[in-house]
Length: 472
Image (cartoon, rainbow, N blue to C red):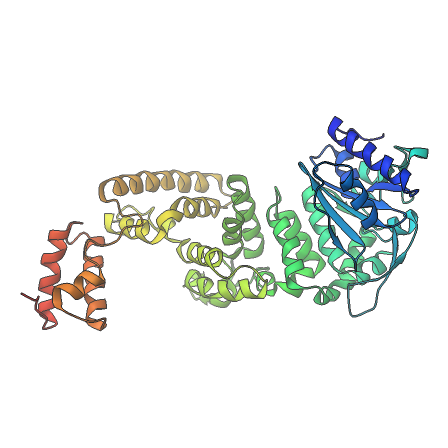
């Protein structure tokens, strides 16, 4: 066999070969498994194409094991899946495909292995290795995918305009593979993506975002976003990010290109964390700069309140991109809203009260917020960056001291709303909210210590101003 396989894989393939021979059909390893094995990448998904009934082959293979693994099959697509130890194996019959203009779902007919390879997205994904007894281990490479693999080029087996127009998700996959594998997209293929970019509208938002998240999680996600931007694809499904691009100059004063700044912040976060949602916070941290941009004479460009507007934009963008709308979205919106706060704490005259408030507002997400803020320091001036980072270390140390002294993170005031209602014999009302807020703010501002006795004494005085008295 032309690829390096483990003993476990070889035993599995020989078992599939025996079953296929008994059924008198040919079968092949295809696609990502072959590609990734040749690249020396870890791979657990195995795709098998056979010249016959893929579901029947999967069921026959499963029957040779005891206990027999469950076969999940999809009759409409002629595919079957089973899981064996660490491997997910998909079986499908070789097929031809034809597409209509309004859908990426093809009409499928039975075909040869060559037909099946021709319908694939890229030559490096059209490689096949025979598992038939007559030519076991033979590489089938009609589109010279091995050469493209060696040259790190993504090229379509057929006319790229047809490939991308038929199934526009392949344009996203081209950019995703380029980002993940470090391959370049062949010039004619990239030009075809530009020409067919509007076709992405027939693809569901969930499928687009699935590919986008794989780009976000790449080692250097900026590569993919730059390709999405230059191809025009990004504007089709995420226009708010495209609006960050460009520099405007008035009276000789310009602002930085916030699109490429965002990509640098994203790459910086990617070197520090594998948290997908922290990376999304990097993507969205300056998303409101275009709508808050103003030029002030004698001063220059300002983006006042962009963190607040960005927090409000986050739910809309998550809905638009079919991202989760609950805790993950709230986490990203929170980091967007807070991303300027730690930087502001680098000033010399910042009080412990400001430190307490950040600890209280950030809670368990403080470490992630600090990663985002450090990543946001992208000046080309190395002296400036060094000074910022040194100041940032001082802030982290001071936050640690305040946290140890006050225990403010995820803190709840010693007297809550229920206790206030009990003390004054109140039902839920505006007065309860006023008193609850007053005691919280007094402790955060350091007006009173963080204990029940001090809070009780404070609340009695504040309640008197509202005409309230404690019950006897």
